[in-house]
Length: 180
Image 1 (cartoon, rainbow, N blue to C red):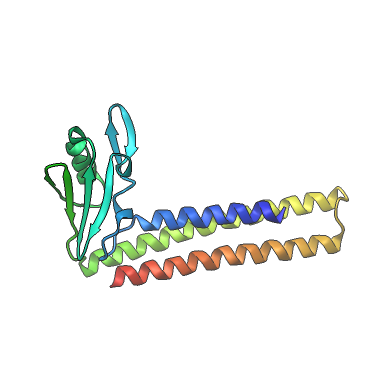
Image 2 (tube, rainbow, N blue to C red):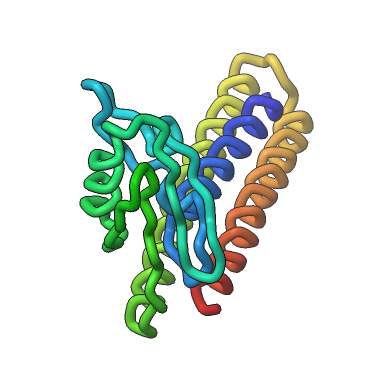
C-alpha cells in the first residue's frame, strides 16, 4: 500500500518540477521553450522533437531546427506561447533573447509558482485521503488490526510530509531563481 502511495507522490512531485521548470526566470533555460507545441506535418510535437535546444549565456536560447521547412513553425509556436518571447530566425536557427525581468513581472511569476505548488499539494492531500480510506476499509474488513492501522496511517503521513517537503524545496529554489 505504502509503495503505491510513494510512487504516486513521487509522480506528483516530478510533474511539479517539470511544470515549474518551464516558468521563466532571469536565467535562460532550455526547459523554458523545449516543450512548446509545434504543428509539424499534421502532428502536434514539442519543439525538442524538431530541433536541438541550447542556451547561449547570458540571455539567449536557441533552437537548431533540423528541417528547414519547420523553422517558421517553430518561430510562430514560440511567439504565440504565453511566455511573451520574440524569436528571431537566422537560417535554420531560431534565437530567443530574454529581456531582463521587471520587478512587477517577477512578482507575477512568484505568485504563479506559489499557486502551482498549492495545486500539487492538494493532489498530495487527495492521495493521502485515498490511502487512509483504503486503510479504514481494510480494518473494517478485518484484514488489519487497529495497531496496524495506526502504524500504516503514520507511514502514510510520513510519505505525505516528504512529498510536501520536496515541493517546498523546489518552490524555494524557483523563487530564488526568479528573484536573481
